[in-house]
Length: 255
Image (cartoon, rainbow, N blue to C red; front, side, top):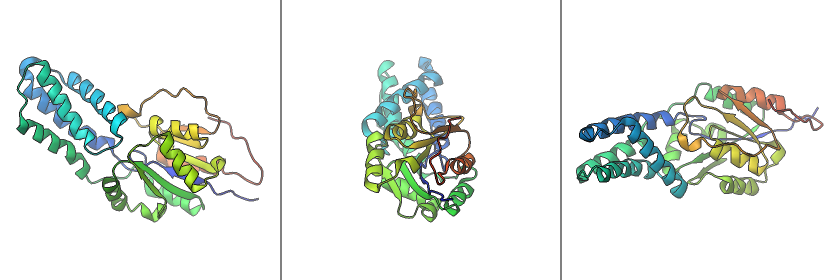
């Protein structure tokens, strides 16, 4: 029996390592600040949260995963409520918010449970591992170095500011991937699953309990290839093992 080696492309943030929780910590500080600054105007945390989310998503749509987008979303939210309630915009407060927003990138990153074991298992089984992450090169490389991810991915690492169908298609075309044997593993319907389905590769969607609003989109297209939804990274090796091609092609039902 001939075992076909699979090509497995992993997202990084909130797939292999924690990310959203650090943004949530900064946002909690931001909400407390603005609620205090606008307490005389009755502005609620929910109103602040909703406006910041709206501005943040619009910024990512336009600029991609640029580091300045998040701190700028805090400032733009602050300006919105200042204009709405005729409150003076203070440069010192804007500087405080920008510094607060940038501090999210200084956090020491942590792996998701089973990260090393999952990558180790797949590597030892002979599969080819790739890392595909969205963001700025300097920031993403620091995370990669902290987590020693090059031990698993070597030079097969792709960092893109815009993570979409076009970016994934460029990677697949340049690398001469066999699409029947290629998988995209990630937590984002928008930037991982939908591009993978569009490109005709298999996908494993790791559904997180609390997800960034930007990632939550409706999956409208019917997959013509394999799509799994799981709740933990550690489920990935078993799925890959079940679907690894043998001597003949096997049609694997979705579950």
